[in-house]
Amino acid sequence: MISFKDKRFSLLQTLLALVVVLLGTYYLTNLWKTKQYEAQMSSAAVSCTYDIKRMAGFRFVKPLMFVDEDCESESLMNTKQKLISIIDQHKSIGDLDIASVYLREYNHNEWISINDTEKFDPGSLFKVPILITILKMNELNPGFLNKRVAYTHSVNTGKMVEFPSKTITVGQYYTIRELLTYMIKYSDNNATVLLESNMDSKVLQKMFRDMNLEVPNVYAAEFKFTTKEYSYFMRAIYNAGYLNIDDSEFAGELLSQCDFKQGIVQGLPAGTVIAHKFGESGSQAMKQLHESAIVYLKNKPYLMTIMTRGKDNKKLSQILGELSKAVYTDMASDAGLSN
Image (tube, rainbow, N blue to C red):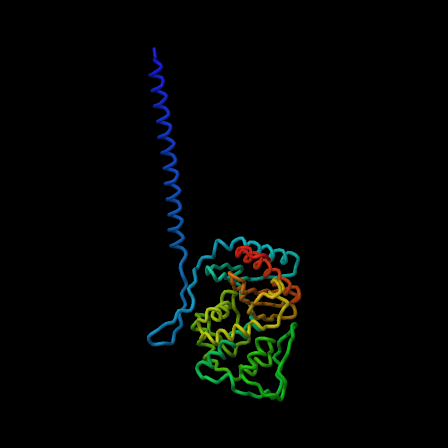
């Protein structure tokens, strides 16, 4: 006959065995999770490398321009899905053939891209590389911006313009600095032609080499970019990584005066500071409208480059605004700001 003391001892043994099993299971489960996490981190560390761009052409130094993690940022994936949904919606109703987006949040150097292998003719977006080239020429030859040139006759650029603004006047003299203002603020093609005639193409081509981009043939009919490739120019201005600080600040100030309000600006609250440039391209049958902008959101500045292709530039400009609004809403929310 089993005594009460024996039963109690047996129960205690069972409880102790149960505790040992539970503790062992807990330990093994957490060990497994830890190993899994370490394996994931190790895998991420191996698969996610860095793209480092340095400026060439010096004897003893090679200035650092960009350090980019190759992996897209998990924290921006919700925003990416929202942008994809907007793009897919407009494609389904025929307003859009394709759109590519590059987004970089500056505080944490995080980024995402959509349709990142698609290339587009930049149109007037190419005026930003010209701006950087002219300012670099001024650094090499101080006072170049004060040079006065005559605008003797109008030139037919052959470009379709659906968003016209101000232009320079035949018979007038302009300084290089004034021509830059017309080119960036008003996207004036006549001022651009006059600047190009005074631009050293070798300085332009060196800039492309410094950014590890395909060097353009200055006589080519067109030159195409992905959104990520084009964004290097805007990033160079924001980072003051190619021009000196004063010239980078001047470039940013000019871009903040761009009078195009039908695109990214539509998706931003009134008064938001933005440095941006737009570009039109394409044909009558298939048009292209693009915009690249640095949005100076308090506590969370970001760069957004959007390139689109479709049949109607007015609809494309509305899509630019929708994509801009979706990004701003998420960025403002993350920064703890009311929209």
